[in-house]
Image (cartoon, rainbow, N blue to C red; front, side, top):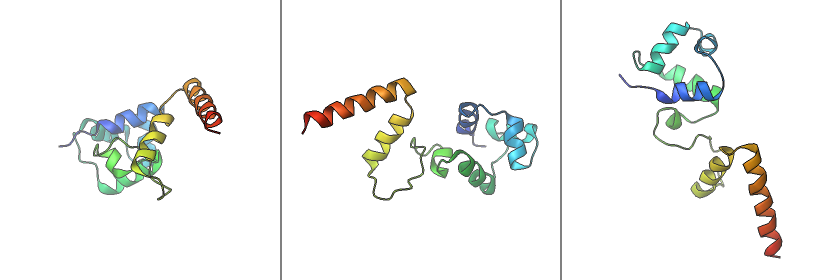
Length: 110
């Protein structure tokens, strides 16, 4: 059986309990816990529900990619998506530093 490590990571990153996710899916915490441990196969319909809940792709949920975001703008290239994901992973303080650096870079190019 597959082990869905990402389920646990996403749940913990969202500060949710197994009971909260189980309620969302309409099941019990014990049953949901078996998905995270790989003791029970995650049905496709539930995988879709969880991907929508976390706003991630099914590929990310399955561990086939490390890019969380669903591309809502088809004009973004793969490198732009990766850059955006890296930015989103930063702390708010670090994001501020990046924004300042980008502003300084733009000013220097004028």
